[in-house]
Amino acid sequence: MTDCPLPSRPARIMSRVLPRACGLVGTLALGGCFSIGPGRLTHDQLDYSRALGETQKHEMLLNIVRIRYADPPTFLDTTQVIAGYQLSRTLNGGFYAYPAAVTSYLFGSGSATMQETPTFTYQPETGQQYAENVVRPISPVVVMPLSLGGLPIDSLLRLTAQSIDGLSNVRALGAGPGGGGSLKFYLLLHDLRQLQVAGAMTIRIATDPPKGGQADDHDKSDSAHGGTGSGSGGANGVEHAFLVLPATSDPALASIQAEVRRLLMLSPHAEEAEIVYGPYPKVPGQIAILTRSMFAILSQIAYEIIVPDEDVTSGRTPPTISPVGIETRPDVVVHSGKELPDDIYTGVKYRNRWFWIEDSDFHSKLSFTMIQILAALAATSHSPGAVITIPAN
Image (cartoon, rainbow, N blue to C red; front, side, top):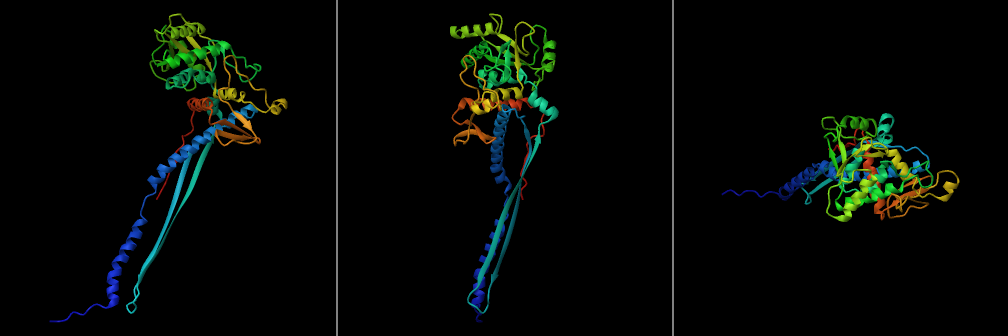
């Protein structure tokens, strides 16, 4: 029988340590192989969405304040957002074993760095794009369906309508301290809101020609005036909006419906009337709404801002327009002061003074949100939309 020689101590150490060393180095190496794309997309898409939303609020409020002081509004489209990432990884390792020594050891080191380089591209609205998105009136066919989503029809029409069947809303300039508004205009909006809440009034959008054989004349008028954002469809390519007053068994609601028909000069038994653009209806049974442009909407809000008395007396800006009739407050209450409070919805600084909307003022926040929705609907001419590209690995 031949005796097998026992392995030396260093060899025994290497036989135990080397598999572990290889496993550890392999683990470190595999740990560097991972993808950052999906995780960054989930995180950054929300962050950039929030940032864009806040920026749009600041831009809208700043433009309102600029108009108040006769500065021209400026709109920038964010056309591209690129969030680029660069990931660098290094890994070093080794194993030292000394046959004649008792001690053998494993060593290793690693590092990883990630760098973010965002790029933003803006494009100012000018020329034809500015004319269509800011200066041209918004079509009633675009405005009225917003009430179907639950937006208060009285606030919506106070913002967008200059007149309804000759009943005038206040004007930003040139009509005195009261803005030239008609009390009947606000009584009509109050009645429409009551009917909306009770479900006794709605808006119908259709592509079929209006009754009475006047489709061609209506369509030509709609595309010539206030056509911004008009939809298309049907045989003549134009959508039509109708105010619907369905029959009700509630005497109180029926009385309000009768008052609405009287103010709009409709038949006492009319259950539906077409809404068209213009100062007065051209055909009996129509409701003519002279809608505003985005510039006119922002001007209306601007001249309702309560500014310091010294700005008015010095001639920097005209006096504030006061609410008319049953209205007791502006649609959007904008505060001003030397210091910015902590609890605000949005705020901007203009010429060493802060202007803000309070976060606790839900009515102002809702009206301000409606303005932003209207600005999006009025934008019939678009630059390329914002694209978020996240290259990774």
